[in-house]
Each structure stands twice: as structure tokens, then as C-alpha cells.
Figure 1 (cartoon, rainbow, N blue to C red):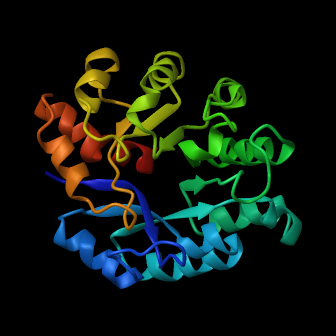
Figure 2 (figure 1 turned 60 degrees about the vertical axis):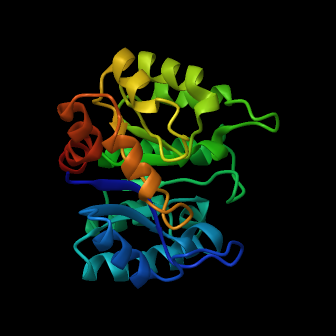
Length: 248
């Protein structure tokens, strides 16, 4: 079955010992596991400097057809080059996906910077990714502002990544109420994730991801391959839903 990975990071990590330690090793892993394409950021853009890291990511995505570029956007761009020039850059590079790390990069989900990024994403028809850890409070609860952003920016498709089974009820609420909400289940330890979500909401807003290199793809591949859902639903999750986002 064809697969497109929505949740992938190029580059090494200084804080975690990983089996995959370089850009080429990740590309080789995509080949080994028969993953046709991957939406990728670069670890440098997340951990050190978004601007330099995004440039490094583009160097790789220009050379490798398997890699689909995902920009890490932060206020660094606003104060370095301005949002107008950032928009020009995103258009020039034909970027369809951006990722934000408000907690990690020192801005807030409820602040003006985030709203400006959402407005830019709506204007450019860009899809926005965010890890679940970036939208929870100090007690591990989802911040209400996330739901407000979904409601206020219906033209922006928001893809939630790295969410665990303990957050099922709030994920179901987002799927039920916001057509612009998408989710991937790489952090689920099976827990009938696909079966339960498809039964309630269909498969059209479920995406497939691995979280490589922090997780190896075996569990994500197995969880979808053996899910008790139709082949049509499996194909939607594995690649068809992502192809629609890439084209739309």
C-alpha cells in the first residue's frame, strides 16, 4: 500500500540517541519501509534557528523527490525579514505546509504572532501542523485557544501530530465540530485508534505519520495495516487524504 508520512524530521538531535542520525539515513529508511513521500522539517529549524534550518531543509527537498518541504514558522521571520517578505518566500518555494512550535520558540498560542501566522496560512492556502505538546497547559490540558483558532480560521487546515490515546475525547470533539481539523496517530499504542475514529467520523481527516527519527516506522505501519477497517479507509489514511491536501 502506498504511504505518505505527514510527520517526519530531517537531521540529527543533540538531546536524544537515535537509530537514524542523518538526513541520508532518513531517506534510506523511507526507501526501506516503502514510504513514497514524507512531509519534512529540519531539526535545526526546530531546535536552533528556524531560518537557517528551513534553508537546510530546502537544500534536501530540492534534491529528493520523496521529501515535501514543511517550513517551521516563528516570529523570527517577522523580525528578521518581515511577514511580507516571508509570504514572498513561501510563494516562491511553493510551500504547502508549515509547522509552529510556540512553546519551544518562545511565543504563545494565544498571542498576536500565532494569529498572524494563521492569517498568512489562510491567505496562501497553506496547511498548518502542530504537535500536541505545543498546545497544552502546565497541567497537560488542551488550551481553549486552540479550539478558538480552529473556529476563527476555518480556511486553515490544522494537522495535530504526536497526540496520545489519553486525549481521545478532546480529539473526537475537534473531529466532530471542525471540518478543518486533521490528526495523525503515530503516538498511539494501537488502542484501536483507527477503528474507533473511523467508526465515528469516517477516514477523510485521518492522516498517517511515523514521527521518524524519534520512532521507527514499524509500529505505525503495523497499526494501520492490521486495523479492522476497510481497504478504502486504509488508503484514505495512508495517502489519499494527504494527496488531496497537497493538491488543494
